[in-house]
Image 1 (cartoon, one colour):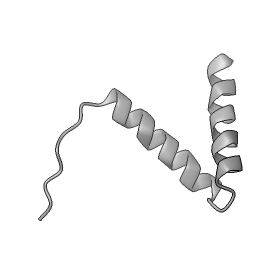
Image 2 (spheres, rainbow, N blue to C red):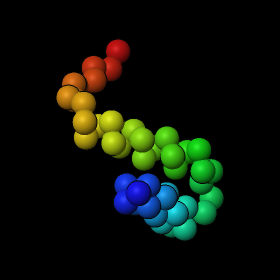
Image 3 (cartoon, rainbow, N blue to C red):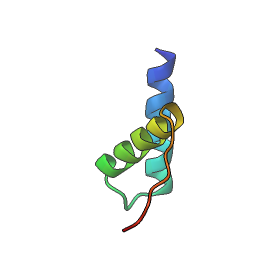
Length: 47
């Protein structure tokens, strides 16, 4: 229950701070940030 509350509080805070962003963008951005914390990072090479 606590993790759900934290999840929705984070989304709510992001939505308040960025009212012009759609919910789907906020959600996907937060998910991507969590993935970056969990998965090993690898350098991206352009070109």
